[in-house]
Image (cartoon, rainbow, N blue to C red; front, side):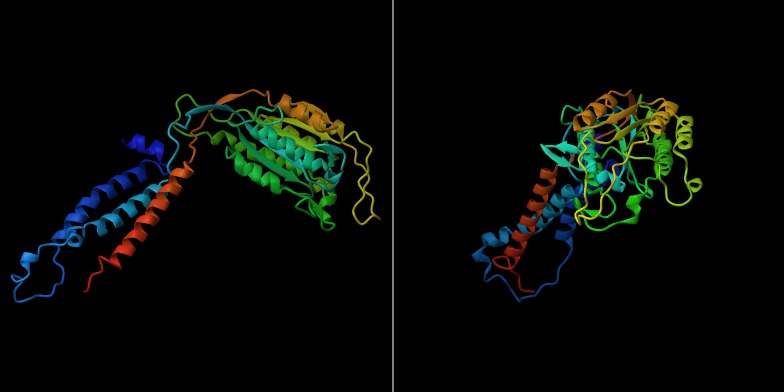
Length: 370
């Protein structure tokens, strides 16, 4: 019974035992409520009115505590987060993937096309990244992988650590912007957008992947930790950290560290083939096209056993991610539940209806004078 409950309610066996204990206590509380003496008004004799009998309202008094009890039961069910029956897996084929994305100022170049219009490099990459994770535009998707995202400009940051909650990952991706840009519009010149700390990004992503081996679910028969760890580094420029270069990790040295830890890096140089220039909206500033440091990206990929790709348009980006999509896979521990939102919502509506019915009755036909 506990296994049946744990598969259908999110909080697990402990909460299931709590529900069973609560339901078992309901009859006991009911009996005690009838036994305990309550304050009453004494009359000299009721013999004169006994022949009237009990009205239907007196006979239906048990409905009031019953409504309250059923409302509490419905709330317990809603809080237990009902699950879709059978929607779980004990094992899955997957790896750990760290998406490392350049968000420096040069990613605002309008040299990629999407839907028949020119878009920023960043927007094109985000669209293909989303399809790579969820599956669309000919990409199969990666539902069983641990996926994280690291971004870098002046500094490297990991807004989304390794997770199988790909919906949350995509939400973070949608909110990712170039420094100085808000909701796809350039608002002001931001100093951070002028730098590309590639070495910092590789080091930070490697550290996150280093811990991926501990993220398998324990107790899964035949399941392994995420031993296959991959980094996909996409940039449109060269390593350009702030301050003294010696103070920032060199990308080549960071790649050697990643190779030592068994992390494979696939690098993508994303610069559109179009000669379309990108003039900032004020009209007097011109941003020079930035060349990709292909030599460094190839060396990073070779050191770690990965591969270098050159993306010149959206179609080539899709092709590149499709090739990366065919990476090796391993069995990793996983147990996935799908929340039954409709079931929880129905239980909450039922609880509200029961409480409102009780309040209506105790303040009208079943109103009692103390």
